[in-house]
Image (cartoon, rainbow, N blue to C red):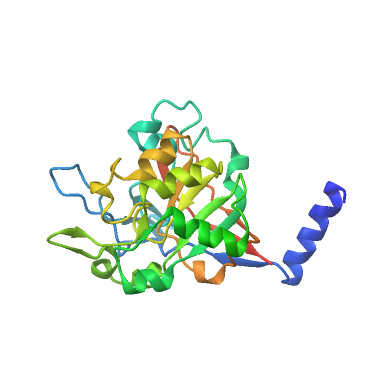
Length: 261
């Protein structure tokens, strides 16, 4: 099939609805839950603030617009390699320098929603990934791998979404060994439905926060606070996740979209 015909067929499928566009992003605004760090670990990102410039009034009679205050890693967002110290030296590791072809890729969705419902501290293991591969086929190079936990359904409440107590946050995520295994597959990146790409218990792992540490060490990307992964097949969808072209950006809120046949 020629490239021109492939694109024409793709466009026709979009118009006809035989390819569905699924929004994987959470609403972004002042109520968006943001990551909380204990003061001894680091400084926190502020909540989103929206400032009105004009609204069809004396400040601008024919137009409405706002200016925003928000962190790069707020809401559904993209983590660039330079976000972590292990990826700080990649010349193409900032949001403005990542090759744009990397923003569009096939996606593998590992459904562990039942396990996460039973145990909010659920950790994805290598054995669990291999079990998924035995059912759905090997994870191909150049794919995104996303962990479906249905955690996004907690997004309406910051308390439920962050799920922290005196012992720390409790949310599902990968083991360090799982991330190491996925890297042998030469994937594009790793994504989750929780506030960050790591489990709530990841600070105590070796290395700490392995999804960040190891993915970015290998010039790979992260996606956090994804939604509606329950509308995606295990394989066969295409993910579009393009960060804003912030100069020297460490990450960016995104409108992540999946194309689903």
